[in-house]
Length: 270
Length: 104
Image (tube, rainbow over all chains, first blue to last red; front, top):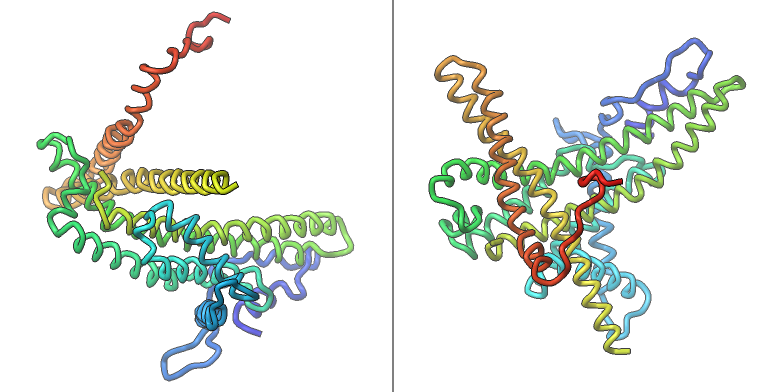
């Protein structure tokens, strides 16, 4: 048993409606975990375990799929090719075209790592999306941010990259008004929203699932509460299916935006 | 058969391109709104601290919002221009909506 199961189950365990205790509302405590083991002051927690397992799973899957590639794919290679071609045709090519094929390994890794990390909220025993801890999101945003800044300065030059942020044809006297907006958008808001969107969706999804799981357990009794427990159980199913979609969608949005940011760094938008 | 597959591929590519552009435009617009408020809110806050007028912070944020809105209309309104020009040249002018004429 790990941290969140203990925290969630302890107040909800023997706590039902009309038994004299209130609804054990989930909150931030459900996102805190006791370390599985510690090395000095460093504590290895469940979200870290999930992050490591997801990374290993993605690496092992693709390594296994393409360890002995054949011209006519068979078995796992079929699945691996399908995965790569989906990202190429749905994410990379629409934003970058054929010249962006060199970024396919990055986008495939990002997409499947984020998707798997998100899906962990629906898999029994794990039941936690590591991306709902913002510390796991910022490193990915950092990689994307450093990459598109590097590519922008490399391909358009320092001055050209900054100049291309403003569309051509803007009157000269307007420039001082627009430059602060563009600088704030490009260097602060763009990476910030890229990370916050993923984090907030996963955080809200996990909270929503926990609310209905707990409510179902709390209402479960031989009383009028049973009707509400059934309703809440349906909501669990509904939110579960919704989260299946959200998990995929968030991975897709993060990767697509990464591709469009890289595209805008490779050549001027206007 | 080969042609239809190529057509399907190009259609899929065009759909994907439209989706990526739509996603980017949407988030760019939101980034402009936040960026304007952040930039001018920050400037207002700094100036307000220097001259001891705290009202400059919210005024700066509102000014940033207005600047962003005008900029969004200028930048993304301009992208629609060719299609409206095309409709003027090619298709029949659209008749006024009944709600606008009041003729029901």
